[in-house]
Length: 517
Image 1: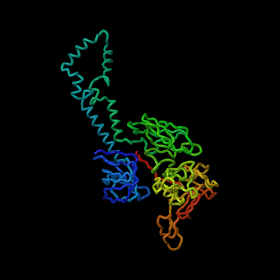
Image 2: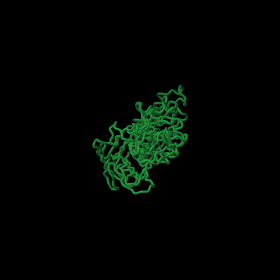
Image 3: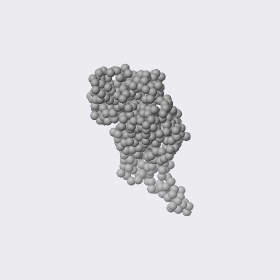
Image 4: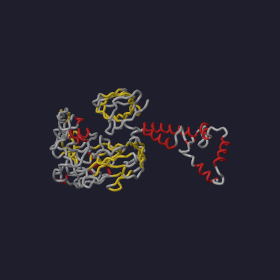
């Protein structure tokens, strides 16, 4: 029964799943097959978000699948293929991932294949004459081979014209693919063809393979603000080809435009090039990474470098930087009015606030044009979750905002996302202090005295039983003056509050699919 491989497949559980359940219902399915041939199967990873880092995972073996054509799928699975069979709640992520166990199995199969071929080639015999058939063919199936050779030499060679060295040179030229000797082949194939067969086998087994010799960092580094090279050697599949790229290989770059995302593509010939992420991909290539050119100067933002194994754990890696202190990724820019449509931050876009309200994401019933009625904490949470992100906690924000000019505000509404001197943090987040307040993830009750009661604080999605509840804002607004800074915060607003000086910024965890290598 063959295992199949699928790329970027994902969905969420439509309902909770007991530990013994073998039938899963998915919604919002993307890149999943509509059905499986008899005996085919593939692996999916279920993320149990009991902690916000999704530490409890389970890999299941999918043996059957149906698709209603609307993104809803029914899966028949074998539980606990990797990890224990555990209870999963509705809404949890289900993703196709190349796990360590799967990779070990594939490599083991490839090694077994290579070992078997080598064993057949050697067969405990010396040299190239390792089977009776090859020996017979080498002797031209002649039982009196010695006499035949003597007679032929007597007829062809003039001893006065050829020295022993001449004869040896001519005999050596018959070795190789042009010799016609079976001793130079295995099952009728020369070494070059055997090598190509092995490469074709590797492509068929791992069609989405991407491996770095150093998995502890991104595949690219910037020696200067306008150049990129590979940090280590790469092995990857591009179309039908298995490609190896050496460390230190240049990535061909266009003239970089400030505030622009770029995607890095690999060609089958081993060359690499970057193009504007909004442009069409070059023909016969594979997208393998990307980066952002800073607003203002157009320099490569080193904290934005990502590849297929080193990237944000979000729907899109665009417009984000990784903070080395906290280890999380954050949007470079504030959320704009189209954030719910695009799912990533952009330069030069209208900032989302109560005066310019954001478009509702499809995941929350949007139609591509209708907007929310506010820019409250609830709306910011919706926008972040629809993009596969969340809002930052206070301690995370202080790390992300470190490096700005403290106690400084811009003085007026910036209107759009942009670079403003003194308000870019050390890791590369723009307008992170002294421009617009940004909602934080923390939400807490207060210590005020008085009795609790049901309160309508959720913008129509149910009441909350509390004495008082508050959501924080970080960084300060444009009129904050000396109050602004990397640790500035306001904990005095209800989650349904909205204003023209409040926006938000998404963050997510780091994903390293090659952490052990």
